[in-house]
Image (cartoon, rainbow, N blue to C red):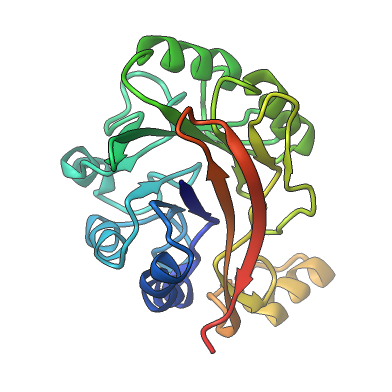
Length: 259
């Protein structure tokens, strides 16, 4: 079986390339599950209920979120009604929304959840390691394989999570930095791992934003609006193949254009 995990969707360009490529890639690559981080889908900061629905309608099975989960006003009221959208699992228990999603295809049950890292991250979160352990234990017997997204800044924290969960989940895949890393690999006990799958959106940019204002801010420190860029739009993802027992057999980094 195969799963496609799409990295941080940034603004309208990111949404457009998802809508253009996901249906085609699903067929061409015989993809069983498509999971996408959508936390920057609304003008580069947060997401709305309607945008979640548009991503699901484009062929995404589960939308995950990160530290920008509450950036859009009112989303905390919308998220509770979105059955295939999950906010980070290690947010305080009082936060609204689902902390995981289980999707099924051809009798295989895939558990999907995200944990936030705590190194250099601003949003209040519980320990991602203990949080992942607790959720896997709580849901034991209800899934056949698991994709754990670690939305974090520090590569050390992401690598540590990969080794911590090696052999217990199908894949541990990183997001948040918007820059794809070159470390896609199978760990010792057949868990697929990658520090960051990269950004889905305009790559002629600084992390998806227009170049000049960002460079200017670094030069003089003056505030500027960082609008979403438009050039060199790409879909960044990881393609993971796995066996019926949920053990990963292959991982490949993808960077696709709509040509």
